[in-house]
Image (cartoon, rainbow, N blue to C red; front, side, top):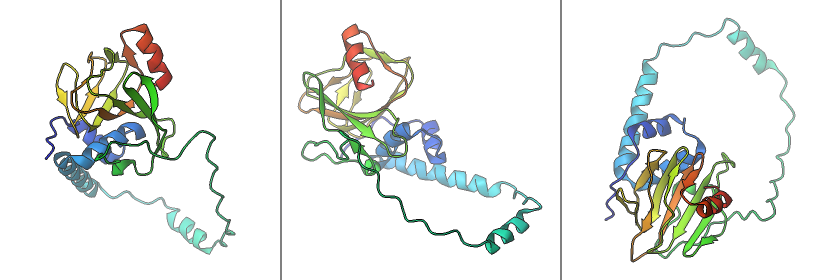
Length: 227
């Protein structure tokens, strides 16, 4: 049984329960909750607490004209039915598919409505795939697939990066992150993730701002990926 050691904070889970997180971070957190019984239970508790607090709020009074407007809407003639629009054509080069995963790895249910590009080379033993979230096409979310023994260049972050380990493990000098583990890194964190021996590592990441690599070459490659 997989032991999950690293979890999101309660503040993040509260924001997820309240629906106030942007689409990218929400997708990464949802993938973590899907595999982590402890956080799934915590999220249920927070949602129940939020519901109880709503029930304790005083009833909001209706506007004086609310009844008249409702009755007028009921009496209004029905609008003509409009045939549904034809599905939008896929943009050229945008494949609504999923990249191949290692045997035994599973596509997270939380990403069922998302598509992703095929794996793209970014360096020896390193590939990436851009995710497309239908609720926010501009969200900067991607998969990283890095071979055993390989590593990302040293870096920090201009804002916030959320990472969920889907397969394999890495150590970044702070801690070991394995399958199911979650990490949040900002400008206070300077690290170098190194994939552990024995297996490649696949991570889902959501990046606000930029990953700030130490070297010019790494910054150039990172800008091409959107990191």
